[in-house]
Image (cartoon, rainbow, N blue to C red):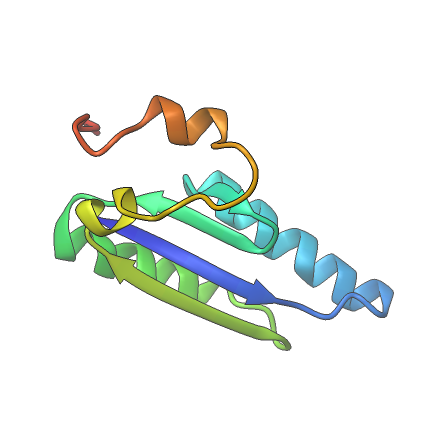
Length: 102
């Protein structure tokens, strides 16, 4: 299962840019990988784990902007078509046939 976070945060002032940096840093420290600009994805082990990470995400939200989270199965994520560009190193490394042990 994957959690995908889509966000659009304003960076027009120093405070807003700092909020963006802190949110992005939180995503990286929490195990999310950048799929493309402002789109991050993370592997989770089932619905309980997804709920835990959703709560962590909600406690680290900035005050402004637009942030969405989508929960999908690994099969759905693997079915995503890459139309232009190349798959990232992380996408090639972790496939739906592999299982992460925590």
